[in-house]
Length: 137
Image: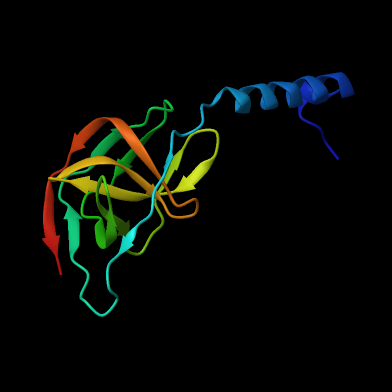
């Protein structure tokens, strides 16, 4: 078995492992607050929106995400901060020290944060992002 040239000795392998651990420890955690979602009734046709223009979102963790042009999102409920939308046909994530599945929280056509369904938490954006939205069928 051929080893990478920089990992020829056990001490190099340990040093590389230490760097990986140190780098992962540097990523900040995503700020969250507990939040309970008021779920939209499944019998009602859930309103859908479409992102008309790709929109970059800078997270407080230093990472960024792009909401893809023409992506479609379905309203699944509401939290005190705004309406909650999940993506249709894909999974959307945000990243800090860990990767979290995330739904958009929108108030007045502005992205104010994310609802993290796995943790049942709300993660606010320090800078809200205006969205160019259209209705989707």
